[in-house]
Image 1: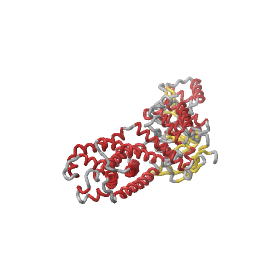
Image 2: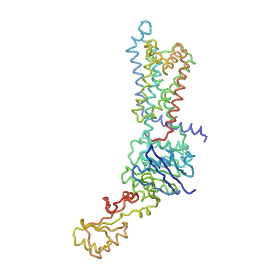
Image 3: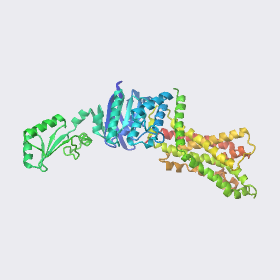
Image 4: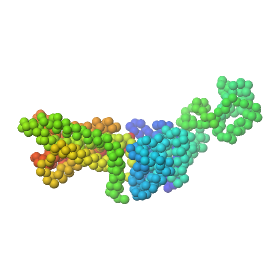
Length: 318
Length: 263
């Protein structure tokens, strides 16, 4: 088990009679990105709080960075860095002072502290704002400062609780880039997210957390295979063209009322091209073509036994 | 690093953070200073004439009343300053940065110790400022020796430490700044029910024991004795006992609250 950065067995936590975590197991190899994917209230934040020593679990055995969470939390703390869901910066002081505060708490020398602070502020594009109070920062800047502060102690394991929630698309992509860079140095990252897309982009392995239990665990590819629902939808206005299409694509499921066909597909370029080739060779032109990829809703419907996958309202046009 | 060096180093860092807050945003501390200064001026110049007649066998003499109320007001200044401590502790606990501190390999108590030392320093500064105003309007100690001055200073620091620990506990159990300010309000109201402004024997008989044994009166009487040469009697050890008792109580309360799992 030495190559596991995080190993949790049977983690449980309840508040009163509300069970938040109902026995979860996690295994995160060193140097990888692991995503805990789930909706609000699934227990993601509670899991991060337990793993980062903020709260204690009711039951379960956990080793983080090789140290037992219950027996030696201080050793765990020395190995980890945490960026919580709500910004953990001191808004009353400047960005630079926040960084120097972290340097002091990591017991760096004054010179080393200044060097590390300046370097990280530069890396996270905060040099210009360094002398301004952190409370005046935008959401994206606060998150960047937050992560920069987490990195001051060069932690080997980093917890990021919903690192992109509330960020605009540009800041989100910046954050993704930052997270990818973290693991190139051999750091282990455990992040939580509500977005399958984000987990897909970043994570080597994903655990789907639902209602305090892990509904599924695996790589993005493995999870997607569990989820039906990826398909191409063709819509026609001309009933004759629709009829032609139904005979050219016998595997498609039909909706004669709205003159639409659904063809199962993973949405890849190759599958799309072969579909388009078949349509072309049959001389069929659809009035509208949309590609539907599974989203988190589908994951949950599929993994928690819900039904109604084929006709989700959400659509993504590629 | 030994755990003591770790404790000292991290507490110093936290103290620096709190002093930075206080320096950057002095309005809270200054607002709280206004109360004792206003009361000092109000009681001396508006009520002082009449009140001093009561103290002075019918002779109105403001300087007699200045001497009478300054010790009480200096201690009230401490009560007022630590309301700010309760507010800033409560504010701090709602900040995400405290969660960050809890996940770092730092001395666990340093967050609280930083607040406590910062608060005691602010109390001393406030007492000096209010004391300067008192001297400016005519307060003079009567033949206090160096030793008595030192004892007076030690008493003020000890009293500040005791009230600070209680205020920190109040800050920790208050969900927000308003609640913290309300919860800590008794610390500035208690002096009104002590021997700060009028002597105990002028109060209704049934109330005298309450006024006599609450924490402020013994401290006020001791300070009065040290600076003005009045009798201290059993008030000296009562004051020290109150200070130590409140410090221990506040310490246990605060640390148990802080070490509890956050919500």
